[in-house]
Length: 315
Image (cartoon, rainbow, N blue to C red; front, top):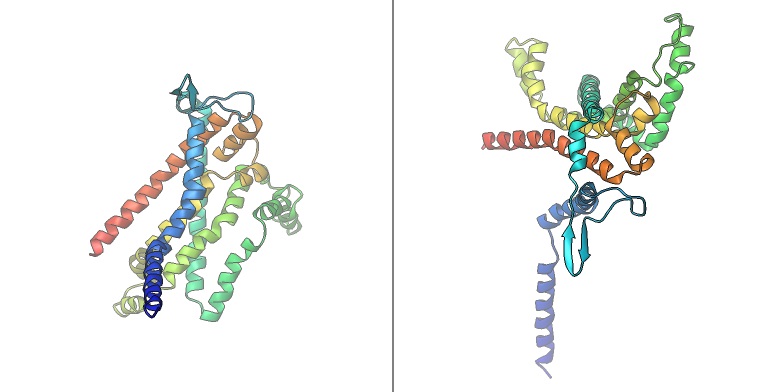
């Protein structure tokens, strides 16, 4: 009877240690949770879309054939590659991909031209002012993305706020054609994605050692030279990160070109929507989606390669 308590204590202690070994903790938890999130909400849906892209369309639910079927106890796999071949042969799809990349690249460049001075000014402001300015940058996220894009319709259309203001001041005599044009799409995309450029730039600029600039000025360096040789190189990772955060979602953007663009505005997001919901051609739409994802992996791979090389160089 006297040894039962110590024995139970030892057993419970061993059980606790085993449970602690089974439950991830520390670094494993920190790394595992994001990986689990990406697996559930990116990898699994992408595998499903990839599977559908190798099937054929049909009338029914679901609107595609089975990739793997069982007949007489034997599994049969029929993979259709015709959708990918059609993507490479059809001029419309090729032109749409090129147009999407061009519009995303121009929007990213415009966000960089506007976002860098904004981030630089915020990073050099007083701490109290800095917090208020960053709150102003993030303020648009408090409103629905769709509502923000709809608001631009009232600003850009022929009888909208912008044209009324310019005509009232005598700056123009006839309304500017901005709504349902590529220019309207650029304005909407720059407005929507500008915070994604400002935030990583600010994060790098605010941590920069200002004594480097003071030393450069003491040695007779001019402000522009100090900026190009010190500030700009030290913020290059922020530039790359912000550019990726803008460029990648801009390539597949659907809402902005649909609401602000015209009928001739070619964006791959509109093509995917049309294939999925209007034509009900899920296999073709899936092939378009997979091709877009593979296309976007190229800049991400280049950035990853650059980061690895930079880390190896610092060792």
